[in-house]
Each structure stands twice: as C-alpha cells, then as structure tokens.
Length: 319
Image (cartoon, rainbow, N blue to C red; front, side, top):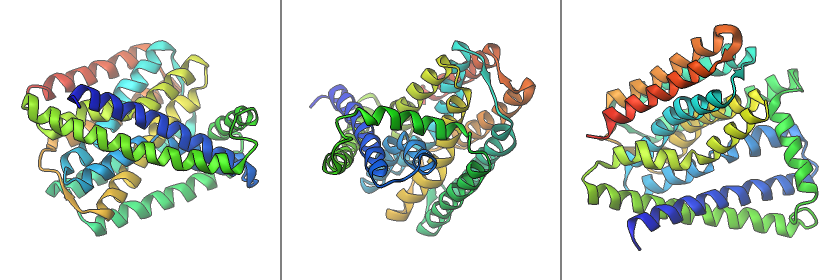
C-alpha cells in the first residue's frame, strides 16, 4: 500500500472509529440512566481525543517515541494556534471567566510540567503514573465545577447528543450500542496502526525526521475532530464549546495520552527539541492575554495565532 493511501486510510478509520465509539458509548450510557453531566464530562469531552490516544499508544508500542511525543506536542500547538485562530477568524469568540481564570492557567501549568518531564527527552512509567493521576484529579475537579454551575456548556453539548441519539439507529438496542463501541475501538486501533506506519515510511522516504512528521501531519490529522467541533461551534455562536473543546483537549493530551502511553511502554523522543516544547508553552501563554482582553478572542487575535502557527511550520519544515 502506498504511503499516501496508508495515511488517508489511517485518518478515515480514526474519524469513523471515534464517531462510532462516542455514539455507542453515549447510547449505552443513556440506556443505563447516566445523566448528561457525566456523559458530557467523560464521553463527549474525551471522545475527540481518542485518535491522539490510539496513535500515541501505537507509536510507543512500535518503538517510535518521537511520534508518540510529537503527536501530543504538535496537537497542542495546532489546537490553540490553528483551530482557535481559524474559529476566531470566522466569528469573534466570547470567553467565559472560568476559561481564563481556571482552565487556561491549568493548561499553561501542564505545559510547564511537560517541559520539565521531557527535559531528558523521554518518559518513564513513574512519570506516566504521575500524569495519569493528574487526569483523574482534573476530571474530579471538572465534575465539582460543573455541579456548581449546571448550565456549563459541556452539559448542553451532551444534551444535544442525547436528543440526536433518540432517533439514532443505536437507540433501540443495547447490543447495537455495545457493538458500535467495540467496532469503534477496532477502527481506532487499525487506523492508528496505518497512520503510524505511513508516517514512518513518509519520514524515511522524504528524509524528514519522525518528530517533524509527528509535529505536522500526524498531529494535524488526529486533531480533525477538534477542528470540526470548534469551527461548527463558532459558527453556531457556542463559544464555550469552541474554546472549552480545545483547552480541555490540550489538558487531556498531556495528562492522559502522555501518561497512558508511557505507563504501557516507557519511551524516548530524541527528535523533540527545546524549541518545540517552548512553542507549545508560548502559544498557551499567548492565548491568556488574548482571551483576557474584553473576554473576547477577536478576528485580529485569531489571525495573529494563525500567523504564529505559520511561522512555526516555516521554522520546522526544513529540519
């Protein structure tokens, strides 16, 4: 199979795998009487990050630590600089106080933690356990905040999915929902394997490092669910979802994806540079004053974020 076809097949399988997994899990949770708050904070919030999760785990198992790390670092840069930049360019985004006071500072702090843990360009099992404990703590914290504010956007997003699910083909049968979850997991595994294999072959064919391929093609490809969600949310004037989806995904990427992959297989990523890590931190830091000013991400600020992403690609590609 050609490299381009491998990459395309991998991305398609990841997309449909994530869709089946989320829809099946939502349908199953609904039949079990689970409320929209729990569904929103678990299935909906983490579902769009499943492509990144499976790709990083597959890369770690294949001995490609550069791709495992670059997938997360590149996705975090792409999410803020490109996705939020594009969403703001389409429509200026109103920002809630919780985002700038709580979630973005957490994202910045975790970016600093990531730089500290990756100073030796690798993650051990104890470091992975530390990160995984962090996602458990963050999820509990998110539940606490959401219960204090039941109108949280993530609940509304889950309720929308539940309304759609009532007429969905999965709704009448728990067996169909379980089958969709299993099928989604299989597609995610197959898709991640195809994408990682294609990425390694592409790196070898054109003389670029696995890290560069991971920071660009792989990270952008696995971030397509976040891109679609945030752009549609911006067009529908749902700013909490547009911003919360990106910030929540970045937090999940560092804690859950880096944590899980290194718990399974400790890996090293010598191709990741200090510049890559500093760009991830810098973009996170830049987003705070942009969103804090008038609690709005304007079109101009969106254009500046896109410009920063373009500069990073220009620096990265010749390596």
